[in-house]
Length: 168
Image (cartoon, rainbow, N blue to C red; front, side):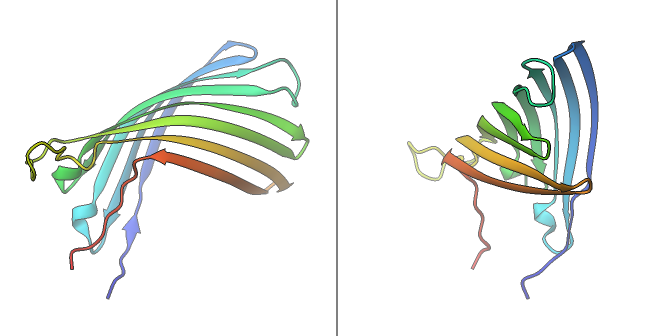
C-alpha cells in the first residue's frame, strides 16, 4: 500500500509600508509545515522572512508594475540530514492588458544550502542538498467572474532540483 495523508499548516504575518503612491515595501514572516500520517520522517517546518518592493509605473489600472523580492528561510526536517537554508531573490514585471486580463513575466534565483554530511567518496561533494537554480516564469490571468480566476503559465528551470525515491 503506497498512500498517506499530508496536513500542510501555514501561518503568515506581514507589514506593508506605502512609501509613496506608486511604491510600497513589504516584510513577511512565514511558517509552513508538512505533517505526514504514514511517513513521519518527512515531517518538516519551514520558517523565514521575505522583503519585497512593489512599484507601479504611473497612475491607472493599465500601467505596468514591477516587484523585486529577497527571502531567506530555514527548512527543518525530522530527518536532519536534509535540513537546509533557502534563499530566493527575483524580479517580476506585469501589466493589466484589459479589465479582466493581466500578464506577467518573472525571473528568480533560488539557492539551497544543505547540512554537511559524511563524505562517501573522497574528493566529491557529499551534500546532494546544496542546490542552485534559475527560474523564468510567464503567466496570464483571466477573471471569469468576480469569484473565478483562470490562470495559465509556463515555467523554465535551469539548474538543480530535488528528487526522492523510496528504498527498495
